[in-house]
Image (cartoon, rainbow, N blue to C red):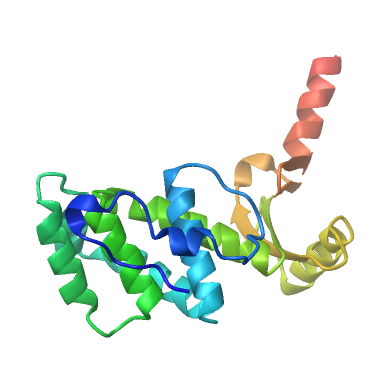
Length: 204
């Protein structure tokens, strides 16, 4: 069952039809943006287009970051919602799935288009949970080699559930001097040389 369009003046939320679907969300999110993202997830799940909708929403966000005209349409609160609805609908045309187009048009109709980036981020969070992905940020003083990257990935995999997959993103920060800092979920592990030096200095 899809998100349904209603008259601009009377549309305050996404269709209740999507909200009553039996699709179970992989993670509970809160806030207005989460409500839109969750409704889009339910509709995309029923349409078997979860990945398609994700890629289309991320593409929209990417274009918005590079295109000043689109960014102005999204962010300018003085543009009437009716005009935003018409322009978003014309822009997307038949280029995207129904769920993606209807989600963006609904946001425009409800004067929430300015929060589209948060809605897209929330949808991406739902998709990560759906794929059982756990994000980990690994910071090192120098870029990790392929062998080191593989070793860290395997080591972190032992600290998540068997059906979960660790997705590593790396950063380089020379100030840590050596070793690693690891942020995985809500856990932070400091194995850097700078933290050890700091501990020694505090002990002296």
